Length: 399
Image 1 (spheres, rainbow, N blue to C red):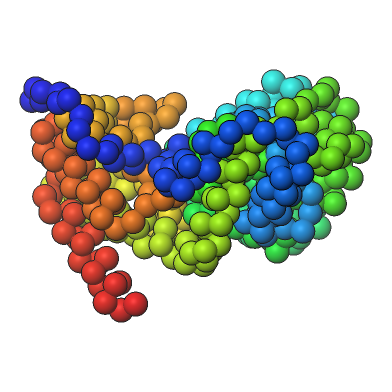
Image 2 (spheres, rainbow, N blue to C red):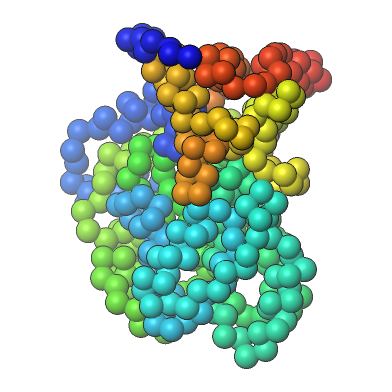
């Protein structure tokens, strides 16, 4: 069915899994005049922001920040910890685990992939077997994507730490928290994570352009022996500066935004933030389950204990293109959805439900997606949004 695009009016419903909606107060904070990054007034903001990132990561350890997206923090972790030929184990979760592994190979690192079904996730018994068999401790680290944005699946980091401890394996645990931090529970120190990678543009609700790594003492010890080339991202160089966690010209505007982001998260309370994301995520899943009748779109993730509370990947019925649904949603109704990545291109669309988001916003998005499904001729059971409404009303009544 041909659907005529419309000139957009009103505010766009931005339902991507990152970047995400930016609250007005953060936009105002970022719109700060230029200031010398050594000005005492800015140093106060800088120090408060770094301390805030530590609280969000739930760590007492070092934090390093970079001008760059999460990929910059990925690279920083690799070049600061390892030497050419070191072997990393990458549990397969989807597009982003594959991408991190590829980056490691680009630096001359050996990569072993713990293969898994993208819809179900890894088998932890298999992980324990791999670690137990590595008696010579050739594996120097596990690089784990906590929340795979491409598939809408969580990888339980505490279980990875438990597998390392159970096998008495000394490998570092690296965690990509880019699409989980600030929207789902993460506890760097309590979970035994040695390096946590994060970014500004998702749960922290900031513009794209800042990323960071939290590093444990064990991680810093590994850094001391690393020989991969590094300069701008070199943690040792950062530690020699007043801006202990940064090198080069500091993006002052983003730090004003980061200070406000942390204020908003802590004003709501992290537990309440996580509850809100869990509530909205479940509403989306109930809607999609309803649509899945009549051979309609379905949840891509098949492991209920690994559902993501920040993004849901929706698998299209055979013979139907996810891009047609996205195109109608955007061009006719001004709702922006995430697309499928790598092997999932055209097969899934993704509904982001993280950051500055509430019930009316998610219900508006789901209603629009259902209209797009109808206009694209995609089979589904109508009324999915009613399932979401019923769930959210039930939760509100019981709260």
